Image (cartoon, rainbow, N blue to C red; front, top):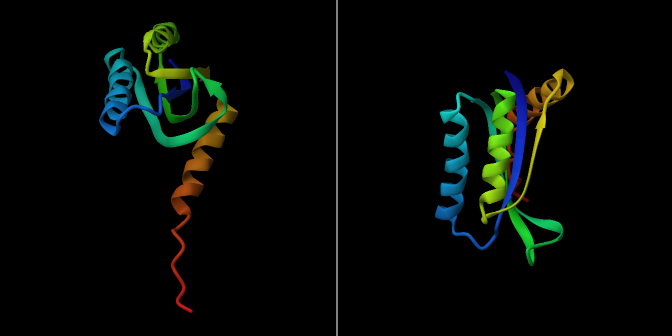
Length: 119
């Protein structure tokens, strides 16, 4: 079992229910194939660096998981067949990337929201 991180970009024309359904579909795809989801992050709607399928923005989502290397090919085929997915990238995490991700998440948890100051 190896650690992986998958980022995929969904079409911005989808409703929030459709976006949630797509994310749930890939989450359950991984869980059904005995992958363990370590972290998940909804990045949200962001502008694209260049148009993809005539879209100038996309809904980004990140899933960090632990799974079998054979699972990656199946996952990428599923992404490629899905018309709602504009782009995807899956890569293996080494020990340094894992340490960075853990540190980044712990730093984000430590930061408290800034309080409004009355003038």
